[in-house]
Structure formats: structure tokens, C-alpha cells
Amino acid sequence: MYESRCGICCDECERKEEVHCTGCVTMEKTFWGGDCGVKSCCESRRLNHCGECEEFPCTMEATMGADMGFDPAPRLEHCRKWAGEKPCPQ
Image (cartoon, rainbow, N blue to C red; front, side, top):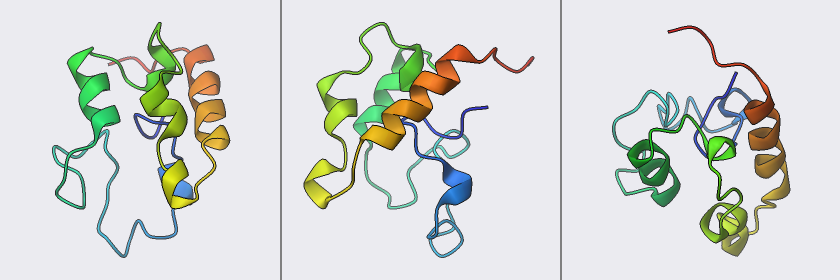
């Protein structure tokens, strides 16, 4: 089951409670109040997460957070894993 648009595992986030984040999948706006290009892109394409995109991994997804010292590899791997799972019935 996917937890975010970009591959972040929200349940493992240490700051989730602190910033009152319920995850971009359930929130209309980001917890910081700004725009997230990945969230906007997925939602405009009606994708649950980046792993469902035929352009995956695009430059935006592959480099997101790298400038702040975050390794994108785990996120990309989560998206690949989620893409292989069957969606939950709506």
C-alpha cells in the first residue's frame, strides 16, 4: 500500500506527529503550506504515486531532496515496489 506520492514511507517519518502531517495522499495542501511539484504532478495525472507514471523516474522525482542531503534511492525503490502491488479496492 502506497503512503505518499513520491515514495516516502510516512509511517516511518519521525516528524509526522510534530508537524501534524497525515500524508500528501490525504492532505489537500502540504503540511508546510507550500507547493510540492511531485504531489501536483501525480494528482494532475490521476496517479496514486510516481511509480505508476510511464516517465518514472523523472528528473524531479529522482532528485527530490538530494539538495538537502536526502538519498532519493529508498523513495524510488518504494515507488517501484508499490507499482508492483495491486491497488486497494475503492
